[in-house]
View 1: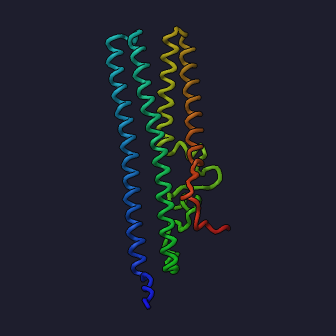
View 2: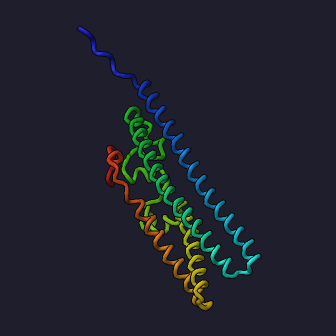
View 3: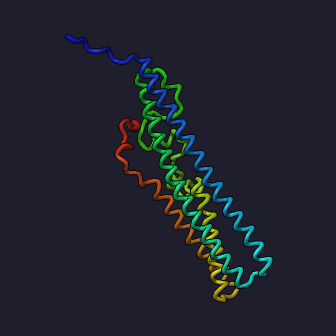
Length: 225
């Protein structure tokens, strides 16, 4: 008759949990690195486009050739900006996933050693409030995730304002190309900028509530007050 092998010791469990914890930390670091890399690429393209348009303006004196080149160039920059924002939102979702995973590991640590509870400043709960606490996001009234104040503080939100300014510039150039007076050009720029800011803001706000992955369903929800 074979004997049942003994269960893993607490030390072995801690070693396994710690290994997974370091793996998630490394993955989060890669996420941040890609986010900053994407932003740098977009800003480099935007800077190059502005310098190129300045050279064309000197040669054409803001004529029809400059307007045509500027519209096409800014459309390319606009595409790059929208693609960058979409990727940043996806990376933010990945970071949320890694935070959930780390919270579950932290919960396992406290199951093994509950006396360590006062030493943790981050959360051991894997629901949305627990993840946001680990990410250091203030979820008080009017300042929570998805609010306009928070959306435009994030990297996607900051780039959204820059992209909206590009849309406004394109609107002004189109108005100038069709021969609108100066007031019409200003109104076209302002109108397209405001519309773009609103659209990007709604897009950013909705991205926070679109996570329906079953693997992110809470196993250890935060206790209700």
